[in-house]
Length: 359
Image (cartoon, rainbow, N blue to C red; front, side):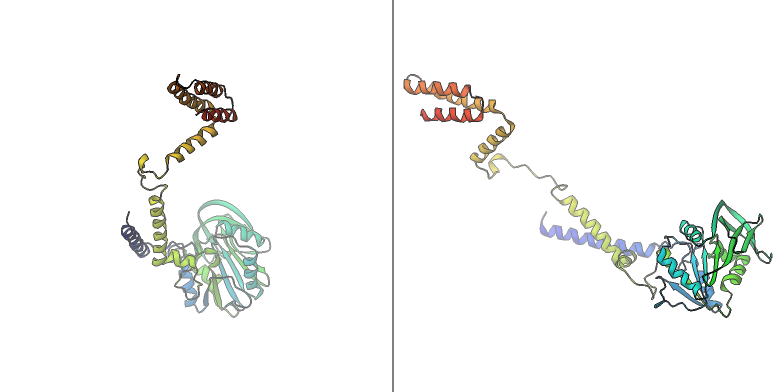
């Protein structure tokens, strides 16, 4: 393959990869995690985020864990941890505990495995139930609606916020770290689809979004959802975001993969078959071929084949000498006997040397 042909092939691969990246980004919607305030899907919470701003609260998204020095959260903030995907480690738990320590409210809602582990670490018992649509109501009976739940809660130091017909708790409130802790055993009432129910919307407004003196801001945890749009002005853009969430980045990835496959298939190992050279086209001399064959016989230990070859050679030489030189014929006969009786490489070399001296 000529150099110009190879360059054109590589250029074509890059162009195709760029087109694939642009078309994929233009036609495929990003899959947003459940509970994310960026998502407008039924499992997202963008409606809750926008509603928070409409009722006069300072709505924030947390792409990074809040710290005392850089946190935009002030006293009386409500932090919403909704349907976390990743595990909440000790550093995240300490950052979340800073909210109730500032007389804020920590709201933990969901039914994921990370949610279960985090809620149990907060001292609230979580018990599984059969997943089903359940009618729930507030203890005073003022609000009632249907929701889907897989767990129930139990805590002797808390007060119930939502109970089922058989008395199981699906939401509770308790004092925590100087503030309040609200645990909801289902994310449904807070999701975009769940807020369409008037009863669920009134419950969320009364218990979470109702503004008062010590309740002025709502922060949404996006750290444990693992997705932050690059268009978000407060988000830090990483190399992974550029490569996998932009058309040029995806084109670079496609081009790299296709180029690797092309080089792999066109290489010597997996490329086209190499035409075998004829013996007269090789650059090796006859001495090199003989030396190579001798080394192969030596490594294989085939002394018999070498001895037979020397025996035939000196037998023909003896037949040509005949009676013309009796002394030389006698010497060749004795040397031939030594060659035939050689049992090692050293013996064979010595016998061949003797036979050569008879010339």
